[in-house]
Length: 462
Image 1: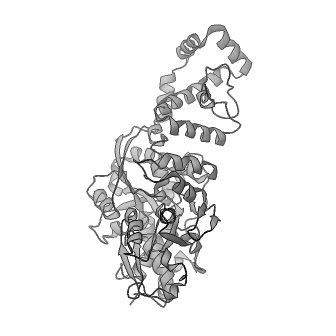
Image 2: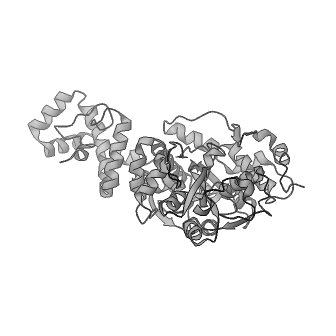
Image 3: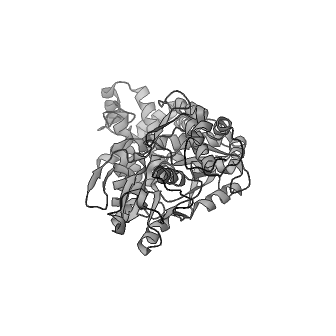
């Protein structure tokens, strides 16, 4: 019997029920990591571990003295002990109560995702049992591209989805599709993107010399598009006339780089690292160097789904936030890389994903970099993030006419709900709604959005 076999075993005379929830670890954090590792390798044990967690709590309540519990078990045996305890404590009811916080309107859910590391919390919640723990039977649907994600959400083929952060704003406003109210429940990831160039450009690192370049982006309504445009414009290039921006699904970016169809891309991982792995490109810069802590992808659903299924949405919210909390801890990253690498999820070499998540990576130019926050998973859907995205939509002509930035941001980004759910889960969360950010050295204040848009010499604002 290995160490994992003792996780949450309340009827073991070897284990002790102190320190953490199951008594096998010095802290709850250590317990969570061990439990996650066990769940990752033995998905079928998830329900057993959840049940045993409840039983451990019950047994600890009956036998606060460790010596008494062990003597009792040795005297009567495990089976007799289990029967005796079950006769005085309704364990099945306790387990059900732990799972349910309001009757779920819908338990079978279809959730869309694009196979990129940005969706790590949403993806890992499936094999690690975070959805099941909330009473949800989730079917994760790998999707070919962002336009398809949008269409399936509008057509109600998906109940919720992995989104690019700007997408719910665009869909709610009817930009590029019929207007359908959508909401951002959490940000899935911050940072975690890069500008990757073909190896033939390794001696051409100054963006001022990139006139005529062809770049791939995953979608027009993406942080990739807006950050690349910002970077190019700061170098004096007009992204609409001096370069070509092509929408390419993330999974096809490396192949297009290899074929010479593009000079580079600002895209999601693991494809920046995969370009290095395949020796067809190098990482020019991480997007955290443009804006450290910038949002990228989000988890969200339609406003209608939330209204019709409030308890289900709350359960989904809890699952994703708990998953994000685990993903934020650097010590869990190697385990997570192993969990999300398989075919049904990212279908990428574990080594590639681990380089992204741990931040220790090869840059394609012969260097090994250590950037622990290359990718992070801060779930806060700040209003000011939404306002910045809207300013870029306005700047580049995606939005015409006057814009009530704050009103749209407050309506689409569910910051208040995120804080409420985090509080219920006992998680710490920062105060405020509109923190200021610094993008390439320039401060962004959401209360001065209109002035910010007009401050750029290269823009489409009339």
